[in-house]
Image (tube, rainbow, N blue to C red; front, side, top):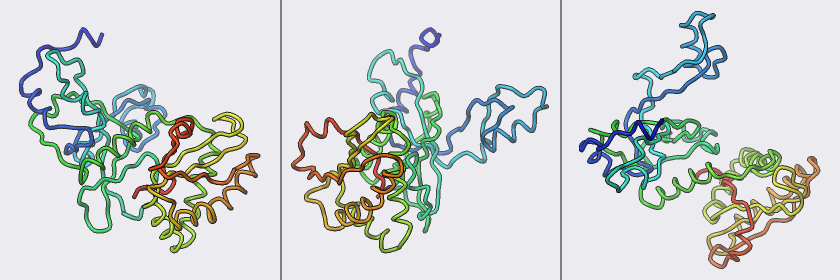
Length: 291
């Protein structure tokens, strides 16, 4: 069905428009829409549409956010190599974007795993974030007449965004208790005292990656786990204090409550890493949230 529907050749205006766009670029005011069953709305806009339809006629329908209420930007999540398609007969007429909007810089949502904080200049006390809970498929023709807006201060941050997307799409299935032991416990410690938030912030500067070892059991039913912390150089005193003293002593008790053993942390200097060891570990999203 899809292959037979491809148009060839593409209009020159579209091929030219695609050239400057890359993954991580922003476009202004993209459409935002989805399909839903109006009998069981899960989002405000869906509920509003449902109210406009007689109850007996509600069912599967198309829901679109009013143009005036569209997000200020959409961030391109499609891989750069799939945008321009360096071939004479392009096969991928769509790209995907996620909504981008402003939140307060101290909003706890900035630390959620579906949010990525951007570098785009924002009003005081605000930050721009990309929200990966929804990605909308747009035909590439929508880029004609548009110019990309930079979301990041440089290539390293754009690469970080790409890695974040790849991690979300390929993230391992783990028992929910693992998130509670690691992510929830870290956040509780951060929120208790201002001094602990500052300590976590200083620790973050030294940390490269977080990895997990399931030492007994399986990913969905672990019995013993161990957190490995990869650092940029030797572990800093701040990183050791936060994770070995504050976090581990509390997380160990949480693990015990769920019948798990949490072994003492492993520390790995990323510049002297044992690649064979790392290859057998599970990469985790940073429990310290965005930098």
